[in-house]
Image (tube, rainbow, N blue to C red; front, side, top):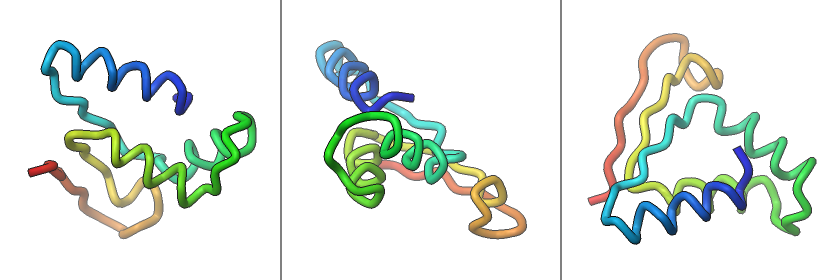
Length: 78
């Protein structure tokens, strides 16, 4: 996903009061691609923070990004 596209989707979702949920599997890899191919001027850490700051919630498989060998999580902005 593009950071620009994510910002636009968030804007549309907010306009219609729809929560934005993100499938955060592979967030690290995607953040790297944004850093490498988009001219954002942000570090990878800043890109990760912005992605999750835009989300109202997300789910993640911890195994896919090498965070753990089993499990996952469901996170809500409350």
